[in-house]
Length: 341
Ligand SMILES: Nc1ncnc2c1ncn2[C@@H]1O[C@H](COP(=O)(O)OP(=O)(O)OP(=O)(O)O)[C@@H](O)[C@H]1O
Ligand SMILES: [Mg+2]
Image (cartoon, rainbow, N blue to C red; front, side):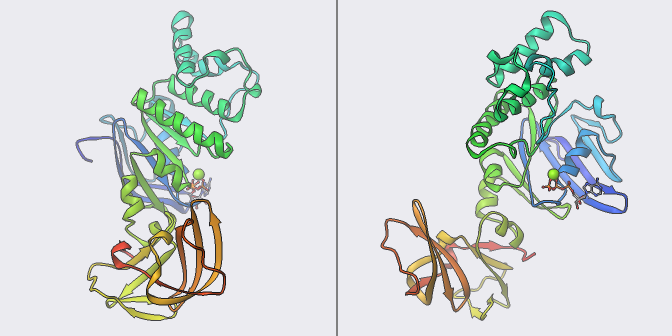
């Protein structure tokens, strides 16, 4: 555990019967940090959150929060808030009553209760909706109620498990900004689960990429986006052209290619489609697919290195399907993978 750590998971192992869902997980989270847990379905994101919330006892390891070992502390005594994908609001209660629910259980009444609930609703932009019943709200508004309900409890850590996945694209974007604002204004430590890399990159201070119950890479969004450590992470954050390096050679589906320079510490190289240089370079290719993507045009190329995806400015003249083009994979544009797992 590092000195600056507010929440630490230490060799955390979580199992369902004989199935180990999370193994030996170490993670230190700073106070006020917004951390995203990113990973494919089944990698252990929800399981990790459940254990932090106290809804699941670890089979190994420890959880510490604000200097206290909470591994065996009951869920309702942890000061950990939870917001799930399905917000589980009470449909028969008003917005006010939904947000007041937990505070009332804690014994709050009268003016203090009103003040806290009003402040909570104001912070999520729902001050005028307190008398409405929750089924009369939009999806985004319901999600705001769920957020206010968790925030008024003043949790030390707020866990959000795919909170935006029920919303349509526009609302998602709006709620993403809202979440970020609420988090920065309140300073609450937040862990946000998503399997959407764009969401994680846009929101988080740091991203934890998980794979099969273990951490694959931790880093700031720029680091994860530009310097994925492994093939798995590169693939997950949108590198479409990924090659292993063996004995200094690029391993392609059509044979080995000698690299123009030695890369002794690289296990692989990966290029985003827009890192591919089209119209110049030593390789020839046939255009097999072309799609217009607004500002850019995306090409699928049949090449001596296998299928390559390239993306170029749409203002440039288009290459027609079945024509020949030349291209390069400039090594200086590649992400260098330390592992090829
Ligand atoms: N109640 C359960 N009983 C047995 N196995 C479970 C249970 N819940 C989850 N698992 C298993 O534990 C592993 C991790 O599941 P978890 O729900 O944490 O994944 P996740 O990363 O949240 O995935 P998703 O993105 O689909 O929500 C999976 O292999 C899953 O099948
Ligand atoms: Mg999940």
